[in-house]
Image 1: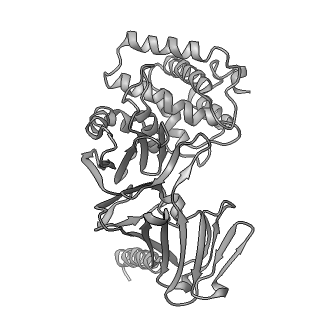
Image 2: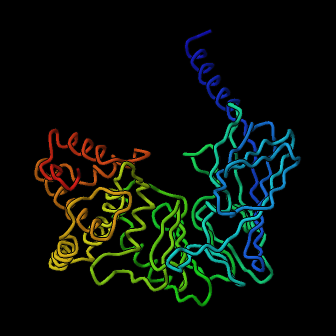
Image 3: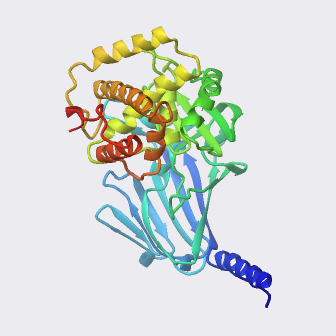
Length: 407
Protein backbone atom coordinates (compact mmCIF):
# COMPACT_ATOMS: atom_id res chain seq x y z
CA UNK A 1 0.00 0.00 0.00
CA UNK A 2 1.38 3.40 -0.98
CA UNK A 3 1.80 6.01 1.75
CA UNK A 4 -0.98 8.20 0.31
CA UNK A 5 -3.38 5.26 0.26
CA UNK A 6 -2.38 4.38 3.81
CA UNK A 7 -3.02 7.96 4.94
CA UNK A 8 -6.47 7.95 3.33
CA UNK A 9 -7.20 4.61 5.00
CA UNK A 10 -6.27 6.03 8.42
CA UNK A 11 -8.44 9.13 7.91
CA UNK A 12 -11.38 7.02 6.72
CA UNK A 13 -10.97 4.68 9.69
CA UNK A 14 -11.07 7.64 12.09
CA UNK A 15 -14.19 9.04 10.45
CA UNK A 16 -15.94 5.66 10.52
CA UNK A 17 -14.81 5.14 14.10
CA UNK A 18 -16.27 8.48 15.15
CA UNK A 19 -19.57 7.78 13.43
CA UNK A 20 -19.73 4.29 14.98
CA UNK A 21 -18.83 5.73 18.39
CA UNK A 22 -21.76 8.12 18.31
CA UNK A 23 -24.97 6.14 18.05
CA UNK A 24 -27.77 8.72 17.98
CA UNK A 25 -30.78 7.94 20.15
CA UNK A 26 -33.82 10.23 20.07
CA UNK A 27 -35.27 11.67 23.27
CA UNK A 28 -38.59 13.44 22.68
CA UNK A 29 -39.79 15.81 25.40
CA UNK A 30 -43.50 16.42 24.89
CA UNK A 31 -45.20 19.20 26.89
CA UNK A 32 -48.93 19.92 27.20
CA UNK A 33 -49.97 23.08 29.06
CA UNK A 34 -53.06 22.84 31.29
CA UNK A 35 -53.95 26.40 32.36
CA UNK A 36 -57.08 25.27 34.20
CA UNK A 37 -54.82 23.26 36.55
CA UNK A 38 -51.84 25.64 36.59
CA UNK A 39 -49.78 22.70 35.39
CA UNK A 40 -47.94 21.11 32.50
CA UNK A 41 -47.97 17.45 31.53
CA UNK A 42 -44.52 16.28 30.46
CA UNK A 43 -43.72 13.02 28.70
CA UNK A 44 -40.18 11.81 28.00
CA UNK A 45 -40.06 9.29 25.14
CA UNK A 46 -36.75 7.48 24.69
CA UNK A 47 -36.31 5.76 21.34
CA UNK A 48 -34.13 2.96 22.76
CA UNK A 49 -34.33 2.39 26.50
CA UNK A 50 -31.26 0.15 26.43
CA UNK A 51 -29.13 3.21 25.62
CA UNK A 52 -29.49 4.54 29.19
CA UNK A 53 -28.87 2.63 32.40
CA UNK A 54 -30.63 5.28 34.47
CA UNK A 55 -31.53 8.97 34.85
CA UNK A 56 -31.38 10.21 38.45
CA UNK A 57 -33.58 13.33 38.75
CA UNK A 58 -33.39 15.96 41.49
CA UNK A 59 -37.07 16.40 42.39
CA UNK A 60 -36.56 18.64 45.43
CA UNK A 61 -38.89 18.54 48.42
CA UNK A 62 -41.57 21.11 47.48
CA UNK A 63 -43.94 18.80 45.61
CA UNK A 64 -43.28 20.57 42.33
CA UNK A 65 -43.49 17.26 40.40
CA UNK A 66 -46.24 14.65 40.73
CA UNK A 67 -48.23 11.84 39.06
CA UNK A 68 -45.25 9.92 37.71
CA UNK A 69 -46.00 7.08 35.33
CA UNK A 70 -43.39 4.79 33.77
CA UNK A 71 -43.70 1.62 31.69
CA UNK A 72 -43.53 -0.47 34.87
CA UNK A 73 -43.31 -0.02 38.64
CA UNK A 74 -39.71 -1.25 38.56
CA UNK A 75 -38.72 1.45 36.05
CA UNK A 76 -39.42 4.36 38.43
CA UNK A 77 -38.36 4.78 42.07
CA UNK A 78 -38.50 7.82 44.38
CA UNK A 79 -36.24 8.21 47.39
CA UNK A 80 -35.16 11.26 49.47
CA UNK A 81 -36.16 13.90 46.92
CA UNK A 82 -34.71 12.04 43.94
CA UNK A 83 -36.43 10.03 41.24
CA UNK A 84 -34.60 7.28 39.34
CA UNK A 85 -35.79 6.19 35.91
CA UNK A 86 -34.42 2.91 34.56
CA UNK A 87 -35.85 2.70 31.03
CA UNK A 88 -36.89 -0.70 29.72
CA UNK A 89 -35.59 -1.95 26.38
CA UNK A 90 -37.31 -0.65 23.27
CA UNK A 91 -39.32 2.57 23.30
CA UNK A 92 -39.48 3.78 26.92
CA UNK A 93 -41.73 6.46 28.45
CA UNK A 94 -41.86 8.51 31.61
CA UNK A 95 -44.75 10.94 32.22
CA UNK A 96 -45.45 13.36 35.08
CA UNK A 97 -47.03 16.69 36.02
CA UNK A 98 -45.28 19.98 36.84
CA UNK A 99 -46.78 22.91 38.76
CA UNK A 100 -46.02 26.03 36.69
CA UNK A 101 -46.65 29.15 38.81
CA UNK A 102 -43.94 29.99 41.32
CA UNK A 103 -44.18 32.92 43.75
CA UNK A 104 -41.14 34.33 45.55
CA UNK A 105 -41.11 35.41 49.19
CA UNK A 106 -41.59 39.04 48.17
CA UNK A 107 -44.87 38.17 46.45
CA UNK A 108 -43.50 38.50 42.93
CA UNK A 109 -43.53 35.65 40.41
CA UNK A 110 -40.62 34.17 38.43
CA UNK A 111 -42.95 31.69 36.70
CA UNK A 112 -46.64 32.21 36.00
CA UNK A 113 -49.52 30.68 34.13
CA UNK A 114 -52.75 32.52 33.25
CA UNK A 115 -55.70 31.45 31.05
CA UNK A 116 -53.93 33.16 28.11
CA UNK A 117 -50.22 32.46 28.56
CA UNK A 118 -47.45 30.70 30.48
CA UNK A 119 -44.00 32.10 31.28
CA UNK A 120 -41.48 29.77 32.92
CA UNK A 121 -38.04 28.23 32.62
CA UNK A 122 -37.46 24.92 30.91
CA UNK A 123 -35.26 23.97 33.86
CA UNK A 124 -38.52 23.48 35.78
CA UNK A 125 -40.19 21.33 33.14
CA UNK A 126 -37.40 18.75 33.19
CA UNK A 127 -35.47 18.65 36.48
CA UNK A 128 -31.68 18.38 36.58
CA UNK A 129 -30.48 14.78 36.44
CA UNK A 130 -27.41 12.60 36.63
CA UNK A 131 -27.22 10.24 33.67
CA UNK A 132 -25.55 6.86 33.23
CA UNK A 133 -25.63 5.91 29.56
CA UNK A 134 -23.89 3.49 27.23
CA UNK A 135 -20.49 4.68 25.99
CA UNK A 136 -21.49 4.57 22.32
CA UNK A 137 -24.62 6.72 22.71
CA UNK A 138 -25.46 10.33 21.99
CA UNK A 139 -28.92 11.54 22.96
CA UNK A 140 -30.69 13.81 20.48
CA UNK A 141 -33.30 15.82 22.39
CA UNK A 142 -36.35 17.42 20.78
CA UNK A 143 -38.88 19.58 22.59
CA UNK A 144 -42.51 19.71 21.39
CA UNK A 145 -45.55 21.55 22.76
CA UNK A 146 -49.28 20.94 22.59
CA UNK A 147 -51.01 24.27 23.24
CA UNK A 148 -54.51 24.92 24.64
CA UNK A 149 -57.22 26.19 22.34
CA UNK A 150 -56.68 29.85 21.52
CA UNK A 151 -52.96 29.87 22.36
CA UNK A 152 -51.18 30.98 19.20
CA UNK A 153 -47.50 30.17 19.62
CA UNK A 154 -44.57 29.20 21.83
CA UNK A 155 -41.02 30.60 22.01
CA UNK A 156 -37.85 29.11 23.48
CA UNK A 157 -34.15 29.92 23.27
CA UNK A 158 -33.55 26.81 21.13
CA UNK A 159 -33.67 26.58 17.30
CA UNK A 160 -37.10 25.84 15.86
CA UNK A 161 -37.41 22.65 13.77
CA UNK A 162 -41.14 22.74 13.12
CA UNK A 163 -44.41 24.15 14.40
CA UNK A 164 -44.04 24.28 18.19
CA UNK A 165 -40.99 21.97 17.99
CA UNK A 166 -37.38 22.74 18.93
CA UNK A 167 -33.99 21.04 18.92
CA UNK A 168 -32.29 21.13 22.32
CA UNK A 169 -28.52 20.78 21.89
CA UNK A 170 -26.20 21.66 24.75
CA UNK A 171 -22.64 20.51 24.07
CA UNK A 172 -21.74 21.01 27.74
CA UNK A 173 -24.19 18.32 28.91
CA UNK A 174 -24.76 14.63 28.25
CA UNK A 175 -28.46 15.06 29.07
CA UNK A 176 -29.87 17.80 26.84
CA UNK A 177 -32.77 19.19 28.85
CA UNK A 178 -34.56 22.39 27.78
CA UNK A 179 -33.00 24.99 30.08
CA UNK A 180 -33.74 28.70 29.65
CA UNK A 181 -36.93 30.75 29.32
CA UNK A 182 -40.11 29.53 27.63
CA UNK A 183 -43.14 31.65 26.75
CA UNK A 184 -46.37 30.27 25.28
CA UNK A 185 -49.85 31.60 24.62
CA UNK A 186 -51.28 34.69 22.95
CA UNK A 187 -48.03 36.46 22.14
CA UNK A 188 -46.60 39.44 20.30
CA UNK A 189 -43.06 39.03 18.92
CA UNK A 190 -40.40 41.03 17.11
CA UNK A 191 -37.42 39.42 15.39
CA UNK A 192 -34.03 40.44 14.03
CA UNK A 193 -30.77 38.80 12.99
CA UNK A 194 -27.75 40.26 14.81
CA UNK A 195 -24.43 38.85 13.70
CA UNK A 196 -24.99 35.11 13.42
CA UNK A 197 -27.78 35.07 16.00
CA UNK A 198 -31.55 35.02 15.48
CA UNK A 199 -33.00 37.30 18.14
CA UNK A 200 -36.65 37.15 19.26
CA UNK A 201 -38.29 39.56 21.69
CA UNK A 202 -41.63 38.19 22.85
CA UNK A 203 -44.28 39.03 25.44
CA UNK A 204 -47.92 38.21 26.11
CA UNK A 205 -50.35 40.49 24.29
CA UNK A 206 -51.31 43.45 26.47
CA UNK A 207 -48.31 43.28 28.82
CA UNK A 208 -46.86 46.64 27.65
CA UNK A 209 -43.38 45.28 26.87
CA UNK A 210 -41.45 47.66 24.59
CA UNK A 211 -40.23 45.09 22.09
CA UNK A 212 -38.82 47.53 19.52
CA UNK A 213 -36.98 49.52 22.21
CA UNK A 214 -35.29 46.29 23.31
CA UNK A 215 -34.34 45.34 19.74
CA UNK A 216 -32.94 48.83 19.13
CA UNK A 217 -30.78 48.69 22.26
CA UNK A 218 -29.52 45.22 21.32
CA UNK A 219 -28.62 46.36 17.81
CA UNK A 220 -26.75 49.31 19.30
CA UNK A 221 -24.54 47.33 21.71
CA UNK A 222 -24.32 43.96 19.93
CA UNK A 223 -20.95 44.55 18.17
CA UNK A 224 -19.38 45.63 21.47
CA UNK A 225 -20.77 42.61 23.32
CA UNK A 226 -19.38 40.21 20.72
CA UNK A 227 -15.99 41.94 20.74
CA UNK A 228 -15.59 41.10 24.43
CA UNK A 229 -17.43 37.77 24.53
CA UNK A 230 -16.80 35.97 21.22
CA UNK A 231 -19.87 33.79 21.10
CA UNK A 232 -22.37 33.32 18.29
CA UNK A 233 -25.44 31.64 19.79
CA UNK A 234 -27.84 30.37 17.15
CA UNK A 235 -30.71 32.02 18.94
CA UNK A 236 -31.44 34.50 21.72
CA UNK A 237 -34.89 34.83 23.27
CA UNK A 238 -35.89 37.84 25.38
CA UNK A 239 -39.21 37.58 27.18
CA UNK A 240 -41.06 40.09 29.31
CA UNK A 241 -44.25 40.70 31.26
CA UNK A 242 -45.73 43.25 33.65
CA UNK A 243 -46.79 42.97 37.33
CA UNK A 244 -47.00 40.75 39.29
CA UNK A 245 -43.87 39.28 37.67
CA UNK A 246 -40.42 39.75 39.21
CA UNK A 247 -39.44 43.43 38.88
CA UNK A 248 -36.05 43.05 37.32
CA UNK A 249 -34.05 40.90 34.93
CA UNK A 250 -33.27 37.19 35.12
CA UNK A 251 -30.93 35.47 32.67
CA UNK A 252 -30.87 31.86 31.50
CA UNK A 253 -29.21 29.81 28.74
CA UNK A 254 -29.83 31.49 25.36
CA UNK A 255 -32.50 33.68 26.94
CA UNK A 256 -33.39 36.34 29.49
CA UNK A 257 -36.42 37.89 31.18
CA UNK A 258 -37.00 41.63 31.61
CA UNK A 259 -39.89 43.14 33.53
CA UNK A 260 -42.00 45.45 31.35
CA UNK A 261 -41.39 48.40 33.69
CA UNK A 262 -37.57 48.23 33.54
CA UNK A 263 -36.07 51.14 31.53
CA UNK A 264 -33.48 50.44 28.84
CA UNK A 265 -31.11 52.73 30.78
CA UNK A 266 -31.68 53.48 34.46
CA UNK A 267 -31.31 56.91 36.03
CA UNK A 268 -28.00 55.78 37.56
CA UNK A 269 -26.61 55.25 34.04
CA UNK A 270 -26.61 51.45 33.89
CA UNK A 271 -28.76 49.05 31.86
CA UNK A 272 -30.46 45.98 33.32
CA UNK A 273 -30.92 44.68 29.77
CA UNK A 274 -27.19 44.85 28.96
CA UNK A 275 -26.37 43.49 32.44
CA UNK A 276 -28.44 40.34 31.78
CA UNK A 277 -27.11 40.11 28.21
CA UNK A 278 -23.57 39.94 29.61
CA UNK A 279 -24.64 37.04 31.84
CA UNK A 280 -26.04 35.21 28.80
CA UNK A 281 -22.91 35.72 26.71
CA UNK A 282 -20.23 35.27 29.38
CA UNK A 283 -21.83 32.34 31.23
CA UNK A 284 -19.45 33.10 34.10
CA UNK A 285 -20.56 31.42 37.31
CA UNK A 286 -18.75 31.56 40.61
CA UNK A 287 -17.90 29.56 43.72
CA UNK A 288 -16.24 30.07 47.12
CA UNK A 289 -18.10 33.27 48.10
CA UNK A 290 -17.14 34.99 44.84
CA UNK A 291 -20.48 36.22 43.48
CA UNK A 292 -18.88 39.66 43.18
CA UNK A 293 -17.10 38.41 40.04
CA UNK A 294 -20.11 37.46 37.89
CA UNK A 295 -22.28 40.32 39.18
CA UNK A 296 -19.47 42.86 39.14
CA UNK A 297 -18.45 42.00 35.58
CA UNK A 298 -22.06 42.10 34.36
CA UNK A 299 -22.55 45.57 35.84
CA UNK A 300 -19.10 46.77 34.74
CA UNK A 301 -19.89 45.87 31.14
CA UNK A 302 -23.45 47.19 31.39
CA UNK A 303 -21.73 50.58 31.77
CA UNK A 304 -18.61 50.01 29.68
CA UNK A 305 -20.28 48.56 26.58
CA UNK A 306 -22.70 51.49 26.35
CA UNK A 307 -19.72 53.81 26.74
CA UNK A 308 -17.82 52.08 23.93
CA UNK A 309 -20.90 52.14 21.69
CA UNK A 310 -21.13 55.90 22.10
CA UNK A 311 -24.16 55.93 24.36
CA UNK A 312 -22.38 57.33 27.42
CA UNK A 313 -20.40 60.59 27.32
CA UNK A 314 -17.29 61.08 29.46
CA UNK A 315 -18.97 63.49 31.86
CA UNK A 316 -21.93 61.14 32.27
CA UNK A 317 -19.47 58.27 32.86
CA UNK A 318 -17.86 60.24 35.68
CA UNK A 319 -21.28 60.90 37.23
CA UNK A 320 -21.96 57.16 37.13
CA UNK A 321 -18.67 56.57 38.97
CA UNK A 322 -19.60 59.20 41.57
CA UNK A 323 -22.92 57.44 42.16
CA UNK A 324 -21.19 54.04 42.54
CA UNK A 325 -18.72 55.56 44.99
CA UNK A 326 -21.46 57.02 47.19
CA UNK A 327 -23.54 53.86 47.07
CA UNK A 328 -20.66 51.57 48.07
CA UNK A 329 -18.86 53.75 50.62
CA UNK A 330 -19.67 51.41 53.55
CA UNK A 331 -18.54 48.20 51.79
CA UNK A 332 -15.45 46.64 53.40
CA UNK A 333 -15.49 43.24 51.64
CA UNK A 334 -16.65 41.91 48.26
CA UNK A 335 -16.77 38.28 49.38
CA UNK A 336 -20.14 36.58 49.85
CA UNK A 337 -22.55 34.02 48.42
CA UNK A 338 -24.79 36.75 46.97
CA UNK A 339 -23.58 40.18 45.89
CA UNK A 340 -25.78 43.03 47.17
CA UNK A 341 -26.26 46.28 45.24
CA UNK A 342 -23.58 48.19 47.20
CA UNK A 343 -21.12 45.26 46.93
CA UNK A 344 -21.68 45.05 43.16
CA UNK A 345 -21.15 48.82 42.90
CA UNK A 346 -17.82 48.52 44.77
CA UNK A 347 -16.83 45.60 42.55
CA UNK A 348 -17.44 47.77 39.46
CA UNK A 349 -15.11 50.46 40.82
CA UNK A 350 -12.43 47.86 41.50
CA UNK A 351 -12.79 46.44 37.98
CA UNK A 352 -12.53 49.90 36.45
CA UNK A 353 -9.31 50.50 38.40
CA UNK A 354 -8.00 47.09 37.37
CA UNK A 355 -8.71 47.73 33.68
CA UNK A 356 -6.74 50.96 33.94
CA UNK A 357 -3.82 49.14 35.61
CA UNK A 358 -3.76 46.39 32.97
CA UNK A 359 -3.82 48.89 30.10
CA UNK A 360 -1.03 51.00 31.62
CA UNK A 361 1.28 48.09 32.46
CA UNK A 362 0.76 46.36 29.10
CA UNK A 363 1.01 49.62 27.13
CA UNK A 364 -2.57 49.09 25.93
CA UNK A 365 -1.90 45.60 24.55
CA UNK A 366 -4.28 44.08 27.10
CA UNK A 367 -7.33 45.04 29.15
CA UNK A 368 -9.89 43.57 31.50
CA UNK A 369 -11.51 42.06 28.40
CA UNK A 370 -8.68 39.51 28.29
CA UNK A 371 -9.33 38.53 31.90
CA UNK A 372 -13.06 38.12 31.19
CA UNK A 373 -12.34 35.87 28.21
CA UNK A 374 -10.06 33.76 30.41
CA UNK A 375 -12.77 33.40 33.04
CA UNK A 376 -15.24 32.22 30.37
CA UNK A 377 -13.18 29.04 29.95
CA UNK A 378 -13.72 27.94 33.57
CA UNK A 379 -16.74 26.00 34.83
CA UNK A 380 -16.71 27.87 38.15
CA UNK A 381 -14.68 30.95 39.05
CA UNK A 382 -13.22 31.78 42.46
CA UNK A 383 -11.52 34.92 43.69
CA UNK A 384 -8.19 33.06 43.58
CA UNK A 385 -8.85 32.14 39.93
CA UNK A 386 -9.57 35.78 39.13
CA UNK A 387 -6.35 36.95 40.78
CA UNK A 388 -4.24 34.21 39.15
CA UNK A 389 -5.53 34.91 35.63
CA UNK A 390 -5.01 38.65 36.07
CA UNK A 391 -1.49 38.34 37.48
CA UNK A 392 -0.51 35.82 34.79
CA UNK A 393 -1.62 38.39 32.22
CA UNK A 394 0.32 41.14 34.00
CA UNK A 395 3.40 38.99 34.55
CA UNK A 396 3.41 39.88 38.25
CA UNK A 397 1.30 41.01 41.23
CA UNK A 398 -1.53 43.51 40.78
CA UNK A 399 -1.56 46.49 43.11
CA UNK A 400 -5.34 46.91 42.58
CA UNK A 401 -6.06 43.34 43.66
CA UNK A 402 -3.85 43.63 46.75
CA UNK A 403 -6.78 44.79 48.86
CA UNK A 404 -8.69 43.68 51.95
CA UNK A 405 -11.85 43.80 49.84
CA UNK A 406 -10.93 40.40 48.40
CA UNK A 407 -9.92 38.67 51.61
